[in-house]
Length: 461
Image 1: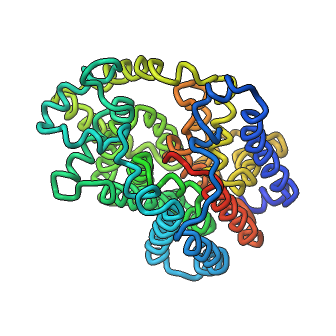
Image 2 (image 1 turned 120 degrees about the vertical axis):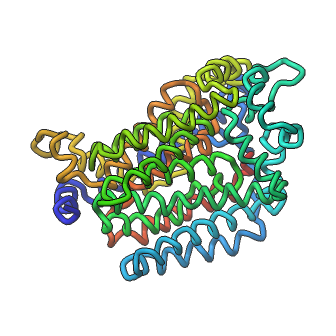
């Protein structure tokens, strides 16, 4: 399947088309940076992002993480393509995770230990600010919805109020076992978040193409999104949701024990939506997996997800009540001032910064592979899914679809470079469609873009 797929894509896509796709994405990012600087002060102030579309401020700087980050990027560019071809599968997965984690930590250290890593999750708007005030977990869950709206004496801080209680619960439990503070929280987010690189590869392989999984691995290990992975709880969300999808994919192919794996996937999916309301859109990658392989794991996975929902409901928190209150809270803050007319496309520019120009370069290949562009004779599209569709293209399309829906909803205006991390990791699967002979070039572009951003902008996350 992979070889036939590669032949079809190569027939219609040249390196020039890849370049044009990347150029279009670059121009989008450039426009998103230039428009605020060319606009009036009132418009710039309404964006609430000093380096829009990135949430941060312009501040060229270097740090002690600069040299390790550059060295690690160079090593991946030099040795990554060969290692992914030669190494056994399981050691390769461990190496991918370790490389992504090291890359994330080195990039974070460009801003320094406190500013770039240990102190990011301890600010007054973050989860750790509320951990010390949670003395009774049961009472916290029962009273959680009552503290979501703003302008109350006991309103939750911005991030806690904007999410279901699952995220706060994770950090409270981490504190309870003696791993409190920003450093431990940062390590948890970094290691779980970077594990998504391995989860995406596992999913693509489980869907039938180890070849594509191996091609994607260097890009996943060197993803620009690590700028925000080591320093935000959204990295934790990305890792949990990625493994939910990966377990679901594994369940579609196991001859025995698949029910237990499907239930485990459902439990992770269930907990995912209690980490962030927007992660209901992870149903799109999940549906892609099931349609591509088999609907067999659907009912056990649903049972696992429902069990999580029931557990939270029994503890006193009903997801739908929280969601409706969060929508109100969203418009109580700066979201009511941020202009949709800018952020509806500025969000996408921020996403390009997180997934890199290589992902944009492969976008046409995704469309052609899924026959969404009329360059080849149309066939019965759905009937081809289980027999010929490329897993990397399918999962990339699922991630991109989730991003577009989230964007059009208007409930994410700015800060999407971190908010959409759970979707970004799937969009990165598109890089597996790029030719192997151009891998070092596109890896260099990915690394250079990430290093340029982190050295020019002091991000808020």
